[in-house]
Length: 324
Image (cartoon, rainbow, N blue to C red):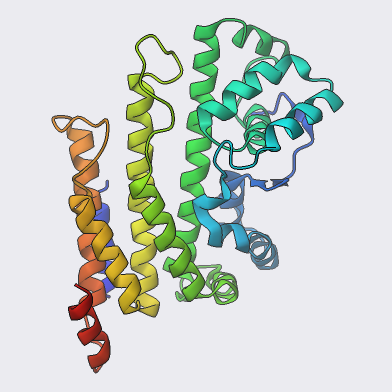
């Protein structure tokens, strides 16, 4: 009941047909997953998917659910990725798109091959123009930037939906009222709370300390002020969703002294969410985002220190006092 009330309070503050079907993309292509499609299958909201299908689909991506945002590798992290992309496009006789594909992975700041897969999924699922009009989109810098921004939005949504799936598993795996609670529990048990806690605390540290890729240069269409703001807004949304995941993990499985100390140090380091880049303090939406993070981080601290439902572990308490 306490956790439900806490999440409700936080939420109050945080209030086609495919045109490129020849690509023949599946739910998983290489190591990129269509998270929005998966959400529609396993959430219990959109379709009455058979329970066995929900279980198997989630088990198939249990590693990616554990890895979270880390599954999207940074551009340049694999030196051979750009060469593999070039070879792949040559084999598919799509060399005309190589220049755009190169700009795309730099714009998204992710691995070149992953970026190509995201482009393919975007064309299959979201792009509404005729196939022969794609060349016009990338013929000028302004229209190319428009398309890059559309793909950025698609990619950003995929990242958020992935986090939403993880949070949904943790919210309802222990609930008899959700149609797939038993299947969720199977997945959570396979992954393990310890692995989730370790992974998502690490992801939170990376997100909070992440710096904007590229530089803000006057006249640069690909690293402009609008992109800086969009990047910062996405970062804050992802930080808040990751905080909710960590809150659920702590509620059900607690947290060790060392991990709690890491979180508290991280929270203090950015003034409980108040230190942000490229945002306008006078903007109401930006101010609200900061409040969400502040309340979420305070909720984690309060939940971790709430020992009212147990006899209390004196060694844990002493350890926390020493660590802080």
